[in-house]
Amino acid sequence: MSDIKQHWDNVYETKNDDEVSWYQENPTSSLNLITTINLSNKAEIIDVGGGNSNLTKELQKHGFVNLSVLDISNKVIEHTKTKLGENGKNIKWIVSDILDFTPKQQYVLWHDRATFHFLTRKSNIVKYVTIVGKVIKKNGYFVLATFSKSGPKKCSGLDIMQYDKEKLQELFGEQFTLIKSFEEVHRTPYNKEQNFIYNLFQKR
Image (cartoon, rainbow, N blue to C red; front, side, top):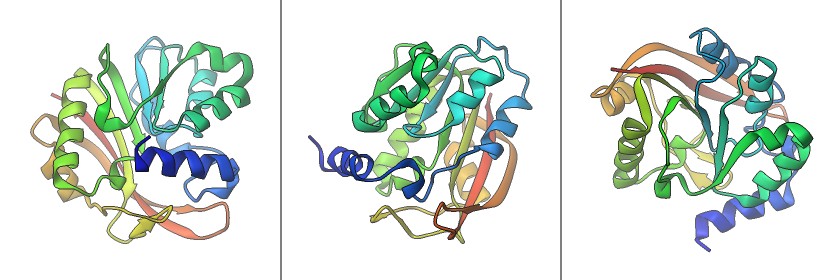
């Protein structure tokens, strides 16, 4: 087992949903971005690092039926499957490190809130950019939320990368057009503030 997988398995074994800083009961900003681009309810959507997120549950309420969730921790995948009950059976669950992800299909929409900023090595960042470019269909969408330049410098005991709109455009601009970008303060379950930057890209 890799050190990073062991780290996240331990986090999810020892903490409840509302005991991790990134947890949102209602993923409002992500949901608003996704529902305003008028996707077909059969559009292939993947939530990357979405182990304990409520996003897929909310997307199901909006009628989306082709949903996948990827997370490095099988512990959190099993937890969320149980939490969703019967609805969890209609989701494709993928246990993988994002850098090892070799998808068997392309997606109309890739959503990532708080996974990308954990990649701190340049080679891993480049690999992520390459994977996203291959996996998203032409004219498809990429929703990315990371810590902003005024956000935390660490999360869950790990170093992270902070981003602004210009840096993200530099990284993803070769294949994607930035449609919308805004900063938002996330209030953690224990009432601390974290600054995020949300971005909606479209693949050219």
